[in-house]
Length: 128
Image 1 (tube, rainbow, N blue to C red):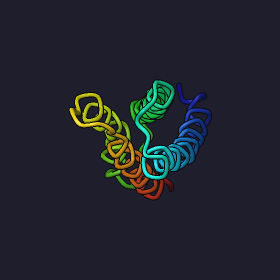
Image 2: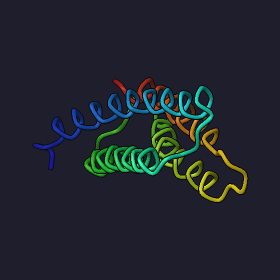
Image 3: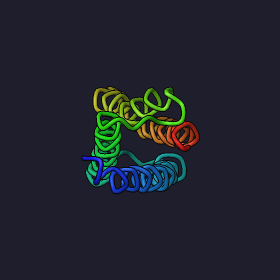
């Protein structure tokens, strides 16, 4: 497993940066749809959100594999931030799909803003 560690570390780093970029883009899309157009969540937007959740899950799994292989982040709080990045969107998805009042795009505004902020903090605490 040690032979794959550098590859896993690079994958984890790339996924975190891609997740941050996509999170900011999705926040901008949510802002445009919800605030500017006064629109509601579309099927495509929700599907894209699920893909972001999957991406964060893959990033977390690579981090867990590295941790199980003996690797440690610069600061152990990185693990908490990683969990927060993975769990932020599912919470706000739940809020959105159970909302009785429409439009519920505000839930995604909060979710992507929170996820992006957590990812920034995780990046800062994870490096050596």
